[in-house]
Image 1 (cartoon, rainbow over the protein chains, first blue to last red):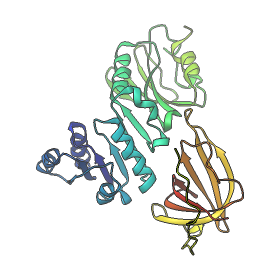
Image 2: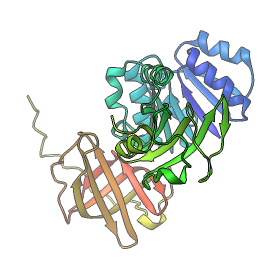
Image 3: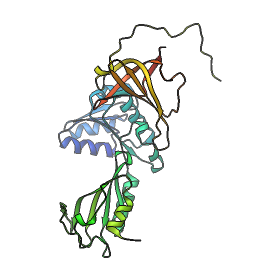
Length: 222
Length: 104
């Protein structure tokens, strides 16, 4: 895939290196020639471009017209929004990913600004910390499809109605599906007959407002 | 203060090289001409989007203007020229914040 990354800071460079390892064709853009030069030195199939990614001409030079993905990951939320909007509006890039630096700005990172997926480090950290401390409560790990779907996690507490039950017996609504279990540090592929144990981490993909249903099936009455 | 647009130089109407909607290719800068057959505001997370349908003999395209509830002159039944980069997902042709010109 052809991927353009705007912002050659530590985030952008790391992404470029990782993605190029998977065989993707990466074009990295930054106004700072020094940062871009560092990327050149690290080699791989990464190409650097010195320029302002907020300019249509720079994006055109980077090949936005046939890019599969653009990731706007500068340390500046305004820049990330401008890059996203231009990518969508001027080049119709199928997938636009943007980094949210200040969580107060997250509400703007939506389709109005051309953003398909936004990633907010502070929110992700909060969710992960919550996941680490929360047993017996619903933790939202990831929001997909503009918040219409989400990946949820529940670590089963001893009193959970799900313990000792099979997945089929949970009678989850059609809005949710169990995608994986983590048991004693190992991933278990769920089948309808899998029996749930105490301390199992249950990962569920849900659409719509499935919170109540998950609460009923996996956590029990408050 | 808004400056009044001079009436002496109305936008010139020339013959446009328009593409039938059915033949619009994804991610190519394209011009289409059609009639506005539907207009709606479609808020997303509390922010308005003006979404309209432009229809020609071959099909219809969706045009979205973000951040707008209405645009002067954009009314049902008008003939409009849309030029911008089109997105084609499935059978749907979509333009986001394109340039436009009211033709009739």
